[in-house]
Image 1: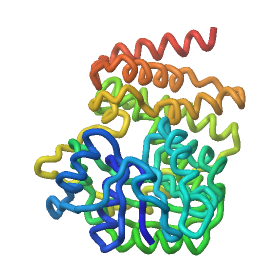
Image 2: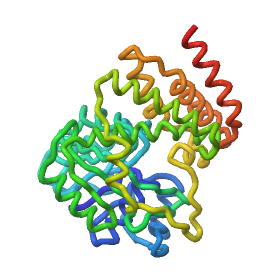
Image 3: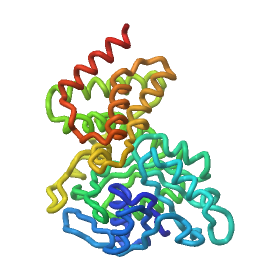
Image 4: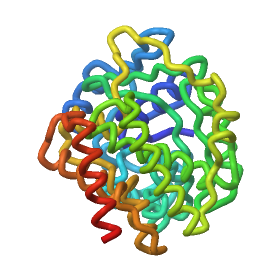
Length: 339
């Protein structure tokens, strides 16, 4: 199988680089300065064993590849806010022997949140969800890093909305040979919703910086509790903290990397790069949506969604709001909801 990584940034670049390192065919899809760097100097992957350079085909869209191959696997690794454009671009792409990518090829959503695979299923017949436990960083154009050891990450994989099949097992086998653990599960959404609860802190980190004070940690506990209450009201199951801890153990331990300091999570990185967009609408916003559907107030998640969107739109500096100011705004938001 050939892997076409649609969005070869932090997560996509690491997955693509690791697959290439174990001998698999990989095509990277990127844009702008990142695409130019990939073409000129290759993908530079900084991992605990050093910096690895992979000279791989790099394109900006399906037209550059001509007809896609029947054995292609499309890996969607863009941020959720960019999913619709990517799906509409790649879905109609012709496949050798007839038909389109949406009709014939598997699409693997290696993204945070739960929305992209629902969007994908509107167009693609074969959609797979991934719970992405992969600490990674976009360092600079052409350079990504992953500090996990002994494994680079853990990627639970399954069909969307549920089930497994032979394709999932084949993809997982390739990932397992590429420094990942890749459990194939029939209930991948259960793992993704558990990860969603953890990702509710992404906006908090992006707005105020590392969640390393008791004040910030307590606010995150309240934000997560809102999320848990919403999932309970919606009847959505998710893996417990204990179950996640048992699976992960010490398999993905972060180690210092030369030339690749570990920054914040994906939302923090979006602000640092000044992309003008952020995925809060599909993380905290997912909880806000479910809360509105099921009659559960979510003032803290609504506040973080609004602040993260504002920071991205106005290109404010990541972590520039004092924690105390956010706590004050959170208190006002809760009082306004009760009133």
